Amino acid sequence: MAAFVGVTQYWLWPSTGPPLLVLAAGLGALWLPFGWAAHRLLSGDVTAARGVSAVAVLPSLWVLAEAVRSWDRLGGPWAVLGASQWNQPATLAPAAVGGVWLVSFLLVAVNTAVVAALVRRSAAPAVLAVVLLAVGPAWFWWGPTPTSGPTVRIALVQPGDIAESTARQAASEALTSELPGQPLALVVWGESSVGVDLAARPDVTARLAALSRRVGADLLVNVDARGASGGIYKSSVLVGPDGVQGSYAKTRLVPFGEYVPLRPLIGWATSNTQAAGEDRRRGQGPVVLRTDVVAIGPLISFETMFSDLARAAVRRGAELLVYQSSTSSYQGSWAQPQLAAMPAVHAVETGRPAVHAALSGVSSAFDARGRQLAWMPAAEWGVTVVDVPLDARTTLYQRWGGWTIVAALVVVTAWCAQSIRRSWSGVRRWRERNRATGRRLWRGRRYRRPADPP
Image (cartoon, rainbow, N blue to C red):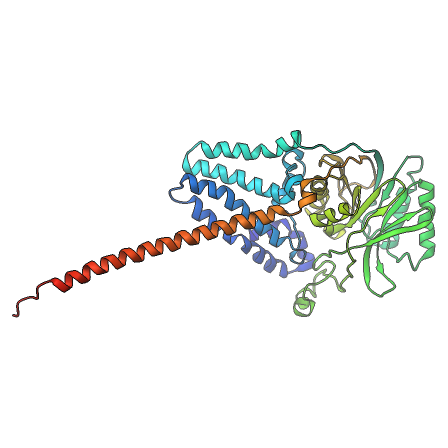
């Protein structure tokens, strides 16, 4: 598992350096309980009861390990097993019930049932595997469907990998200026598309407002600049024909990329890397920005990975999840498609459509059931115009949140308690047998005739 973490996040090496190896080893160790439980339940003479316990316990341990490593200070939920189904809406469907965690649980449960069938040489676990595998498609086809809503046209601007901030903004403006004449509801730029504080540069704000009037739609730009308070923020800013309509400041920062955890202690290890030389400032939490047509929940880059932020935005009234990212530092790596795929997961979890505009790729869009509407690879640049149906439904995950994690904790706790009870009962029986044997031996010695003296 340490190798898995390292391979799926190898692209962080330029920013983190050697601490990536330590992080991978530490996160991989979270799966030691899973390995121990797998050996305990699936080795030797596997009874039917142990097989059933394995199908419940092993997925629970897997989910708990994923939940712990998904803490944003540990790197976030990159390459969570359930997210691997982002392009399979039928198997991703259980995310609407229990989030990406339930998808992970079902995947491990299916594989565990297959192993139990092979170990026991029995058809019963194989039947259980088929039943578990059918949960997702069954929910997709027969579960609640989203309520139909209006369709809005969204433009996703992807200018490419441009290092200089002024040139980035100019490229985004040039691409946007080609859009007049289309009935657009919103134009979305990528992360760090504007390199100046709009509050301190009214001339830039006026130019963006004029562009909004010319296109006939609001612009959601992204500012990466030092604010009036002196700190550097990354902010989604909604610019309309009359100027700035609202903004959202990023709250989940990329470890090492945007801040260095425990900088006084490990800052020396990142001195020769691309780690942030100065920590970015955090915002106050998700907000909803409203255009004349749609209420949007903006989130930025690293925040694309987190289910709770999407739930918070929808809870505040967002009809459309809008993600902005850059990934210029990770050009050509797995980070780009991984990031672009996660909006599909959150669309299913929250029952709201999601779009993702990337500065240098990959840009994507998904409907409320996780079906792909658009996908622009990192190797391309330009504007993707996509019609997004604002279908919506209130999912069970949106209502109950991470109940799958709580259920997994209950299952593991119950199994551990039962194992301890059985072990203690075994110890007691062993002691009683030894005590009884000891009494018999003692009595035998007591009543034995003494040997004749020599």
